[in-house]
Image 1 (cartoon, rainbow, N blue to C red):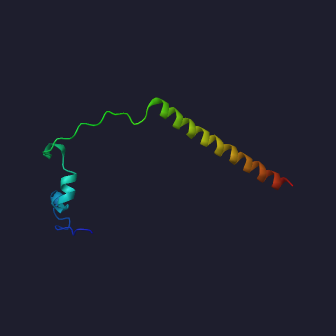
Image 2: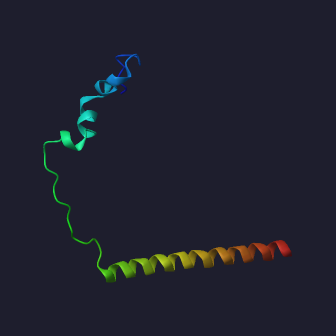
Length: 82
């Protein structure tokens, strides 16, 4: 739902008051916030072995797609040539 602009653009300095209260609290500047931010987790998402294995699978998938595209194009060229 869209809120109606109360001042119809007459006073551009009051744009902050036109925002809904939840939006104002979400985009408020850090100095107006009173709660502390939790410390980010330093736990790694992947180990080195998992990362290498996943990237290898991705590279293999790309290679298979390239080979399939090449075979398809060769087949199309063979049909067009005859």
